[in-house]
Amino acid sequence: EIRSIRAKMVSTMQELGTKGDLKTLVKELISDHIGEQIVKQASSIFPIKDCFIRKVKVLKKPKFDVTELMEWHSADEKTADTGKPIEGADTKEETLAGSGGRL
Image (cartoon, rainbow, N blue to C red; front, side, top):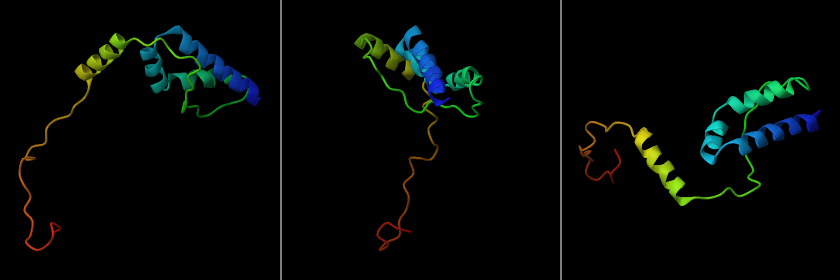
């Protein structure tokens, strides 16, 4: 049972790795969609309750293009959540004399 479930998991991961580029692969791995697919496929062998991806092993080095890498970083900067500035962050805290900076 364990070997057949592992074979289903490996085949699912290989299909996902070969059908798209690296950026879509990372997005798919972060989402919970793959775990649900594995649960559906392996349910005929043995019922699985929680299935999560915690480690991925790269078997073959992907083609690396520096321009694509720079495009990813520029796209992330535009959509990244940088937050809001804190009001009153410019004020300096007062310390007691002789306390060594501790209050």
